[in-house]
Amino acid sequence: MAPSNSINRGPKAEETSLDTTLPANGMPILKKPNAILLHACRVGLRSLVLGYGLRAGVDLALKLLSVIRKRMKLVDALRASLFGEDAFRFALVVGGFGFIWKLVDNTLRLVRGVDDKLNGFIAGSLAGLSLLAEKQDRRIMWGQQLAVRAGETIFNSLRLSKTFHFPFASSLIFMLSSASIMYAYVMQPHTIPKSYYSFIVSTGPIPEDVLGMVRQNVRGVAIDPLAFVNAATKYHGTSHAVEYAKSMTSLPPAIPCELFHPSRDSHVLHWGWVFQKVLKKILPVYLALNVVPLAVLRMRDFFKRPMELSQRSLTNAFRSSVFLATFVSGYQAIVCIQRELIARNWLKSDSKYIYWWAGLLAASSVQIEHTGQRNNLAMYVLPRAMESLYTVLYQKKWMVQIKYFEVAMFSAAMGIILAYFQTEPDALGGIVNRILQRANVWVEDKKRGRLIAPIRDAHGRLEFSPIVKTPIDEST
Image (cartoon, rainbow, N blue to C red; front, side):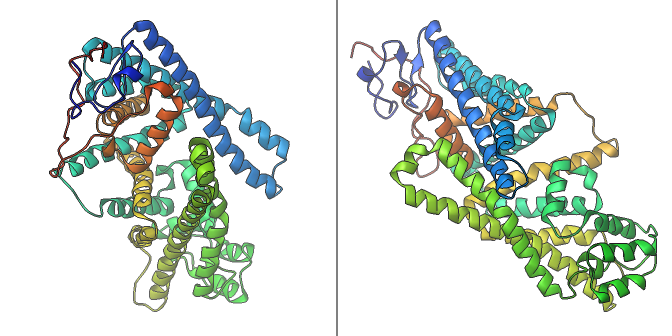
């Protein structure tokens, strides 16, 4: 006899293959080993194509910006994007992940006769080993990102079940993480990834050699006064900035704004210039990040609602660009104000802690973003703050290094994420759930349908069990 509708809300039995059994989450269980293997191969191949298209598409969109700015030839952009090592590595990761996930998960469902979190955890953990195809720096990045996403999933599950909830958690995590990162950017740049540090330096308005002077000055290291004059001259300083640099001693109370923005004597004008500089630089990047996933993962929806989705992508890109421009200019403004207080003798000298507090206050600009994006930003910066902390602790010999730890972290994280995705998908963060849902629909066999989200009662409890113990009567 077939399960009742309160338990089974999948496709009708007669619409499915006789080689399948319907669990409560709507995704049929394959009943023959050869069907499981062939299905895993099909999913793996589609996943490989999807991974290649995503990575090559994003790389091409970003490199086309360099072509437009005449920094790269079109043929070089096409060659690097479409035939580069990065695209093929990412394709192997995604393809291998899809193959192992479906192979192990469907095998466990058949052997165990149940469809629960354990299946998803084992399948996701083993599939996570496909990350070995990536370069080490990217393995670390993926391991960090997915680890915090797994933590977010557990937190969301507790919130949805009304077991535990902490409001404004995303904004607070982002602010505290940004504070640590901006402190590291000024005082301990070696504790954050080189690519991330380079991005902050290139996006921000303060030259790297001037940042070096700040580090030395805060630590009480004397600086050759001629270096101040050279910096003011090198960065097109005004006559006031150059003269001020000539009057500086080897150990001033703080590196002044005359070296932070020597070409502009006005603080306000400089803050405005920083805002427009960041906005102009980052807007094309956010446009690419919004448009490419839309084209790859939501092409059908785009053709149905082109104006709506285009407007949403443009709005999100502009909103995110305004947020980042506000963050950077706000950080600069706070540091400038501190310099003014020192110049007026309201503060004695520079302090390394001001750069932590400046990061915390500037990060409050995250409120410009919509709620979902605040959560994404928090999950993005948290791993970098944790890596900075880990590096500091490792330097103090309070931590040890473990080979391939990032792969183990990624595997465990994907185990947790897939365990919830297959049984409690509403607990996943918005962007993770959307990506997995879209990717799963794209790589899955169309006749198998898609996962059905569970229904919760007024107390947050699941109204049906995703576990199937009795197969459907196939004669119906």
